[in-house]
Image (cartoon, rainbow, N blue to C red):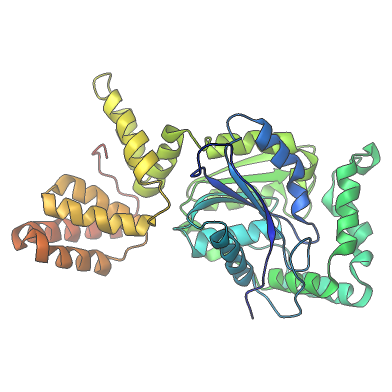
Length: 398
């Protein structure tokens, strides 16, 4: 297996800010980045999303990306996407993908949770189809080229009547299929044959939007609802009049869903609430919000906007790294109640109990043994509680 060299197209965010959020868009097998044309136009026209930086990336042998004859996995494709993101400036990003692109997006969220801010899966899944069906598809393309897939794709990709209505986007998508490199298509099909993230879906904590097409027989609305129920923080919407390429058939509906999901790149409060929930958990945040009074409301808003929407949302450090820094600061200050909350957050952000203990041990050198001794007692109690109750909550505000 090898990491493929991928290429894409970049659209900068609205001036003047250079730190606008990045949204990475990934297409499906047999299509190119042009699949997202309608959505990109809609995002640009909507004031709530116009500032987003947009990066569309093609699959191997599709569109702008070079062909490959080497075997690839979905993990390899995810690594190729990360390489392009790093070339575009790096940091954390939002990601949305269709079908195979969605599988790559899911892989990114599972394997690189510190890089992915939000996840959008369009007509996709943690496992798509069966290994024999993908092997059969790969063999058919090697024997007859992608031209042999056009009729079947036309039936699978679109809702009944869509092509007959003469929308040029459908015809362009089928024409693009003819230009896809045959061997690259086959290798991507084989990547799907071996892809199965079903067992790790419950560990994916990033806010997730799932979009299905009512006429999609490949990744059905029922299968996507089942996936949504397995994800800790997911919402599912079905576009009743769309097929497998819902983003092409219903771009305005997808833009509206993305706008609500992303909260707008400059909306610090919406961004802060997403990050706060991802780090502290819904139970904690729901309890804090429910306890809000007119007296405490300005402080809650301050926490959400500035602590979570500005500092915790910055791409310079991963959430894991920020948890380490936060633990050290709280141990030093002797803030045991806040420490209890952030030990839970550190566990959610991927630190193990042993790593948390190492942070306290290291901090003892600089903060003093009494503070570290008290902190270790808090760590011991929280880890014990968490092992029995994974989403246990502390009712502090932070």
